Amino acid sequence: MDRPGRAPWNPDRTWADPLILTLLLLLAVVSAAGTRGRSRAAAKPAERVQLQGMLADAALASPRVLSTWTALAAPQGRGVEAFVDRDLQGWDRAVLAVHAGERGELDLAADLAGAAPGEVGDLFRAHLAWAYRGQGTPLSRIDAARVRRALGEGYAGWILEARAAARAGGDPAPLEAKAAAWAAPRALGLVAAGLGMGLLFLAGLAFIAFLALFRARPSPHPRFGMSGRALVIVLLAWFATHLLTGQVINLLLLPLPFLRPLFLPLSYGAHAALGLAYLCWAEDLTPADLARRLAPGRHGRALLSGLGFLALAFTAVAAANIALAPVMPHGQPPQKELMEMLARTRGPLAVAMTFLTVAVAAPVFEEVLFRGFLLPWLGERLAARMGPRAGWHLAVVVSGLAFGAMHMQPLGMPTLGTLGIVLGMAYLRTGNLLTSILVHGLWNGGIFLAMRLLV
Image (cartoon, rainbow, N blue to C red; front, side, top):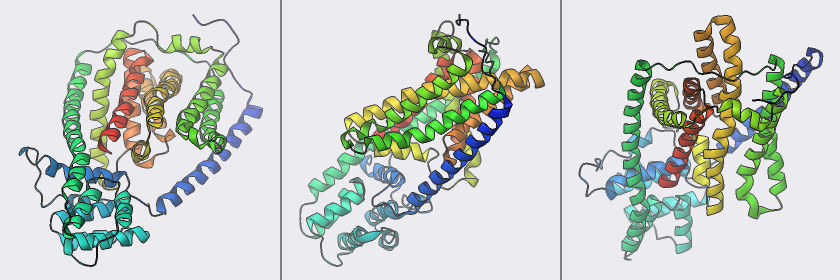
């Protein structure tokens, strides 16, 4: 039982409304500044290949690596064209240029190579012309290494250097072996990912049928007594903390560069802890009280249900992305920001800290906030106005879309909003927040693992 205490927070409108307005204005200014900063960063030409180029490199190299597996080998002549029409820029297109050169499409290769920016881009074009046309002179080892690093030291970088070495009369075999060594695990990863996604999609369809045939008894859900103004203040205060803690932690770590791998867990942990403190204070709960409210009873069935809802989440997200594909940027990963962050993570400590943050800390906190708190708060009040069925269903949709919007990833909104709705369905079905935490953790952990294997 919760300990006895004061009533949930109900701030007076005379000061709460001006506070809400002030917080909204501050957040609008900070968010706009952040958006402009990200736009300027995105407009600046990248100095090396990005996530999409690395994924394209792995996908285009896979048929060559798997050429002994006839059933898995794709036609060699049309692979590059499948990527040319995507929204690839700079060094991502340079990767395609190398693969076009490998297929003998030299005019296409020269056209794609023009996108590589800067001095290293000029070196790349000279390297490409020498390797595949015999034009010009070979690069020095230092310049060739600069080009290889700009290409991500992947298959394209190593195979280009191998062709240049062969053109100069050297032995390309060691360089070809390095290209194959980079591509082989990624080729197998792509095959495994394809099989896994197919199985998940089918399992999701089967779980939909299961949910339709076996309706669960209504599960009790926690009640939160704070007023609407209190809810808005708690959410805005948490969001402001989310935006500001990263800046503060970044400043604190400036003189301590060896602690940079701790930036993500420290910044996320700080705003998550403060967000939970706001919620517990507003409801006069201890963390233990909150945990008992959100994860009551036995947990085995709740966790087992999470596996089914994970499959359902994948099926629903796939359907949403297919439906919205005509209006979305072509070839952009739906969770591009998260995937790029994971792809850039290097070093054992940074990898471990990032995994703990995205696969453990983030699912726990975000599920407490959106499914454990916002969903039941909305559901109880909407059900009183619209009836239980319509009210709770609308609460699932609203809290799910709020979850998607909170991430501030426009390209990821269909994926994250759909995922949020399925997570709400999971919580309503079991009445135990461990179900949605498990689904969320496995989802983020799966993306993390895919980025480690493929990039």
